[in-house]
Image (cartoon, rainbow, N blue to C red; front, side, top):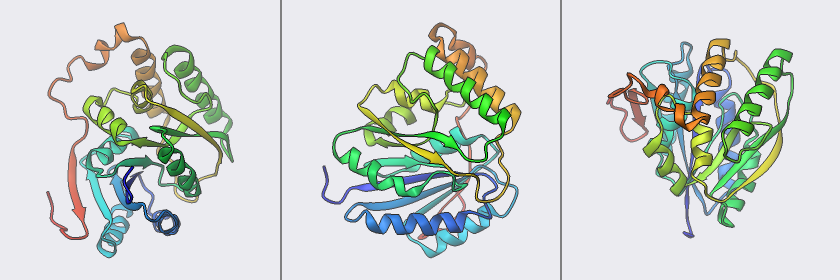
Length: 258
């Protein structure tokens, strides 16, 4: 283990204009407590239609440990996470939502477990405060499908927040595409894992982009992906299609359009 390891924190963003600055303040406080572990932040704007990208760009200009990526089109949180992981330089990486529902305070314990040998640390929600009945029903059904059909070990209540070692990052980035549920791919790495349970907070602002259409698409993809003989059906006609397309990419030192 390095004396001064680097942690990459990947945050997919979609219409998080009202929460991003507040989230960064909390994350900056936590990162100070993690020393001598160094921290880089990777914000991935999933083609927001509000001022999210502008807020993120201003933060990037002020802080030299932020990378900012904007996707060319709205591609979903899994694509945004993978784009962030592709840009991550860390010895390990954490991905978490930008809506302040996932508590940054868990990061300290996640890093501790990684330093003790866990290659994956899942943060599993036990309760989602203020969750609508239909959303709760869909979530329960979805994670039942994952648990019973996938053949991989995942927390039964569902996860949105996780740490992974560099070996897992490489495994995911090399294999992921638009049709692959990223949580299943992480679990398929087969490396040592542990679980931390937490209560998921209500959104701190804005409106969720997690539409019924997106939920159903993910459910179908997961169902097919869980049966390995059916996986080729997910990729028919997708040869040559990039898993995500980056429209712009920035750092504090070089704010040039790529």
